[in-house]
Amino acid sequence: MGDSRPWGGAWNGPIFVLTHHPEDATPADGVTFLDCDPAEAVRIALAAAGGKNLGVFSPTIGAQLLELELIDEIDLHIAPILLGDGIRLYHNPGSEPIRLHRLDDGDPTSAVRVRYQPATAARIPAEGGNPP
Image (cartoon, rainbow, N blue to C red; front, side):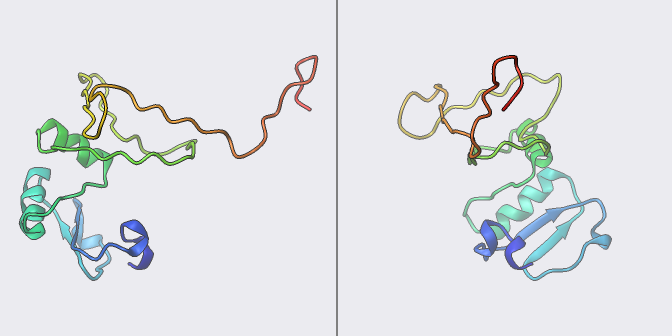
């Protein structure tokens, strides 16, 4: 899998991929394809982790595990890029909001404010409303 493994290829532990079609998956070293419900996949992966943390890198599986109350911590990484399209971190229309509490220093219910500036120069409209 080369650098397609987590953290640019730096991850060297087991990887489990939950899929309804494991027969269509391309075999790869250190990767196990599972066709089971998410709770069973967590049980299998936790057993393989030997007491270490289990990371979930899928918003759809993560949402299902949140609903099953099988997530005990969420580690958000903020990257300075705005995506025009992509998969939402958590998308569950019609459900109740899930409140998060910070685990680091500070008020555990406060928002984290991160400010960035676009890498390209702002296009200030000229008089008359047309950009330069």
